[in-house]
Length: 205
Image (spheres, rainbow, N blue to C red):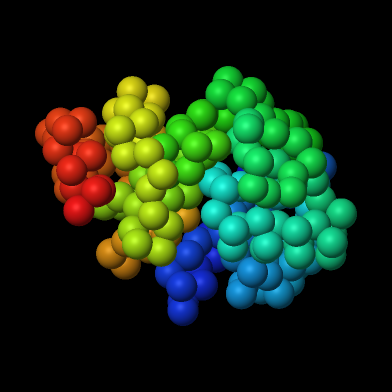
């Protein structure tokens, strides 16, 4: 198992590299355009062949970064189903899985932040993009398209995962790099002990 987290300091955005150490196959999750050279250098140092680029949402910056990385590596761009605003090679629905080498990533459909948002579950880790941040929720740089649906996605699909599941977000909300489902259910200011109506009002303010 190979796992690396890359933080882009100016934007606070996180990218991830996952790899199969036996077959030397890798994937990138939410690559950040400004960190692309760092990501490619890391992939080279790890001796990985990049096969897939996974996007958690349909934000324009994600599309630009993925297209650039695809042109440099030949890796396929993967996004959620009905993702009309991005150029993708494959669109995946809730319940799908993606194999790289001997490893498997499971797709969890989490519409709301964008209508085709997804999260990716790999082993004990969950990559949430802007759907669920540590202690918080999506910010002004990635405004929410459908707050009610986002609330439903988080509370019915993510908060029902095993409590020890590790959460790796796409954005740095408060200087932390990882959380757990248990912690977010207990203390996330947007979702913990909140009603759907409260959340919709909060996101619409």
